[in-house]
Image (cartoon, rainbow, N blue to C red):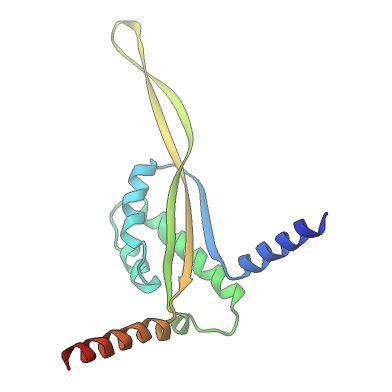
Length: 151
C-alpha cells in the first residue's frame, strides 16, 4: 500500500470513530412507505424520535424504532462513561434507498399475467451530537446587533 493510500485510509478510520450509525438492509416494505416514517424523525432529538416511533401506527415504525435503538447502542459502545443526556443526540441523517424487488405474476384476464413488484428497502440512520454552547453564541451576537441598531 502506498503512503498516500495509507494516509487516506487512516483519515477515513479517524472519521469513522466519530460516526454513529446503524443500517437496516432488505426491509420488506416499499421505500415510499418507509420514507413517510423516516421524514417524521429526521432532525429530532433521540428521546423525541423514540417516542414518535413507539406510538407510530405505520408499518415501518417498529422497525425504525429498533434501528434507532441500535444506533444509540453503537454510540454508547464508542463513548463509554458519557451520559446520553449530556451528549444531546439527535437524528442527523436518515435515508431510505430502494432494495431488491421480488417479481411475481398475478393472473389477469384472457390468459395474460400482470407483474407485481414486491419492493424492499435499505435504511441508514446517522446520529449526531448537538453542541448547545455553539448554538447559544450566535443568539448572543444577534441580540447585541439588535441592541446596536436600536441605539
